Length: 435
Image (cartoon, rainbow, N blue to C red):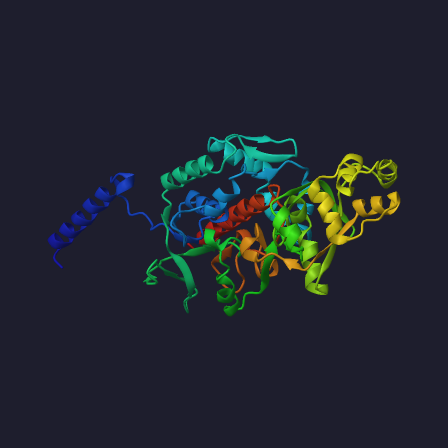
């Protein structure tokens, strides 16, 4: 090369270097953002999407329903119970055997964090008389609308009418559209938030269980939780009193007692007090074929006080009238006594003891499709601390897909939000480590 050519080449190189150094920042070549997909647009999935978007990921959320958050909206129909205000130890105990796995998750996103999050969305919360926590608007829809607006501003794309159809050889999920056609997906990380198997018409079908089991993931069978139970009512009792509340009452089984109310159904019993005992009742029926639930129809009176009332002269009153006046029993309660004892005791003490412990034989839980929630799911032992599946690196799970259950009262939603938060944060960290 001639010297003149060398000088020309050096001049060209120096000029281009100077031009590059003086380009504005936005003109510099930027690294391609990481891509994340979230499958399931309930509280857990949307919370995971929010954390991923905040970390700079390009996030797409897929959901099989035409619109998102359907079960969340259903939960808010009677007043959205977001979480509970009780102390940390009592709160954690509500999750029973799943408490060890959930403890670090709830520590990362406790009830106070959920309340702060709701307030940031314009829905400050308040504590009700029972200790339950509700948004000021008392509904789910304003909170969900504000949340979706914030996710849209963060660049999150939501694609309804798409569902998980399996996993490919590369470990990536196979997504199908409403016509059953596969949809190409690109993802550096995946979060599964497909729910359990309760209320499938709202989106959670449990169809993912076999898919994960086929990949070697240990999944505990899904069963009904917070559910009603069946018993063999007589036709007369069922037809007359189905839909009638039993209150106040106390239910006892297996050394546990719960006060509240229940509802007579054509098939059996449901309601808050029943739901609180659903786990132990369900497990007892699975082991023994039935469970005898004791119902105290006058939990505010002890046996001696009730005996005193029932010792009054009947003065020609019918049994129903006497029990209404002397014991304060409603017609449905009197009819329940007759269901379990065709001949009511004539003496005050045995009658009082029957009123304080009416034995109702339960034969099975109502179908999981009618349950408020489900138990079972991916075992915590098959996940790392960030809820990533050890058998599927880069795939995280959250919400009711995990093996836990809790009573109503805010504990269900709190765990869904918290597991979504932890899975989303951990997924974002996984992407950064792989960058």
